[in-house]
Each structure stands twice: as C-alpha cells, then as structure tokens.
Amino acid sequence: MEEGFEKNGSDREEIFSKSVRAGKRTYFFDVKSTKGNDYYLTITESKKRFGDDGKFFYEKHKLFLYKEDFEKFAEGLNEAVAHIKSISPVVENTSSSDYSSDSSISSSPSDNKFSDVNFEDLDK
Image (cartoon, rainbow, N blue to C red; front, side, top):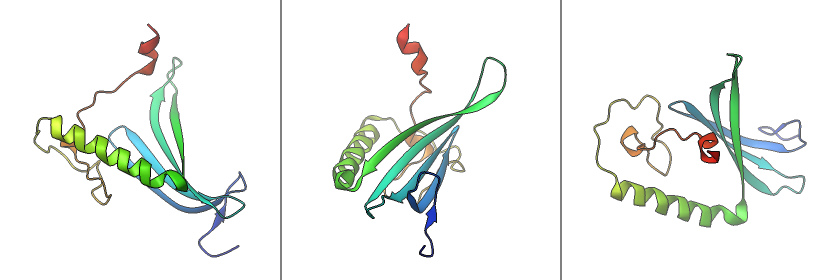
C-alpha cells in the first residue's frame, strides 16, 4: 500500500479527508478511489439529533460525486451561491469561528440566511 493511502472497511482507498464545522452541522469531504484507481468525492452532512428517548444520534446525508461531474457540479454550485448572495440582504458578521474561509466558495455567517429545515414537516 502506498504512503498516504488508507484502506477503509469498504475496500476503497481513502485519499484525502477534510471536515468543516458549520454551526450545528459538520460536513465531511472525502476523496476516495475505486479498485480501478478512479477518483470520486463523497460529501457527508452530519447533524446531531435527539431521539424520543432523549439519547442523541447523528443524522447523516451522503452525496457521491464522480470526477466526470466535478466541473458541472462546481459551476452549478457557484452559480447558485452567487445568486443567493446577490438577492440576500447584507448582515453584520457576528462570529466567524464556525466557518472556514479557505475554500474556493467563500462563506461567512452573513451568507447563511437559511432556517433549519425539518423534512418531517413536509409530510403534513
């Protein structure tokens, strides 16, 4: 096995991993390779939730992004973020401790104008 590569339980090579804490959520960006040495990205959103029994658990949502889709995905994401920024009112920056500024898409607390959505409410 090459240096810097780790085998995980699903027989996939883990190449790179980055976690980003953003408020109540944590995002994980994991670059992995297939058995054929093809690269892909998994983006996982993790949020701490409390069950009816009072015990907590982590709710996770995962997205698999394959290299042939990277450019179109990035274009769409950048366009959507730019549109949100263009229509959102400017709000004073209260705290930047939960946000990372080292990504190609800048994000700051003033960019985060979304309320917490509870998808269970959609069935009502």
